[in-house]
Length: 280
Image (cartoon, rainbow, N blue to C red):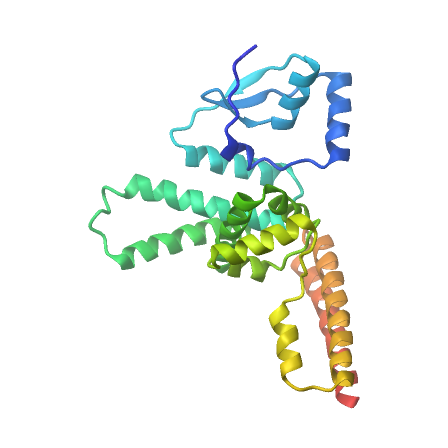
């Protein structure tokens, strides 16, 4: 059997299947065999990690194909695109992969052009970065700003993963909901702050509500009745946002007109909520 190398950094890019999905894949491989070849680069596994685990555990034969790349960043970008194109990924995973793509792409093109641009100005460097984000924005059909924000989100998740791979997996799987803006902020947070959140998530004690907001409300000297109303309003808005996100996801592949109708309906609901608060 071919000596296959498991590279931990590449392995970390491949989504970890939940128990039910993994067992379903295992049952399929046991019944029909591993009909899809594993993909290698210099004997390093870059696609088919779960099938490889199943085949080695049950002594099932498999085939491999080799791909040619010059740099690790090229491999990483291929793996990212392969995952994005193959799977219907949730928003948090899409953001993570876009951020990783942006990081790898900048490094790849930076390495290629470093000699030629050795004496380039800082302004030219910013122009190159902007060009990269715009190019990826077109590929993923999002804004360049979204790509740059996704990079911060990816950096935060990488830092969280270095402390607790379990915490990182819980965020990416959606088991623990962490606001994207919060993750972007963590990209520049202290190691201590990141460690605290990572361990809270791992131990199941993470509280999504930002403590500073609660403290600010209490410091404002509001009455208990006012605080109660604000908390109730927060629940309504949170539920509203969750429903809106779900509805938007369902219509994401639809026409611009359909999306506008969905957004308009929620704007109407927000306006109605605002009027009721104003009257009260």
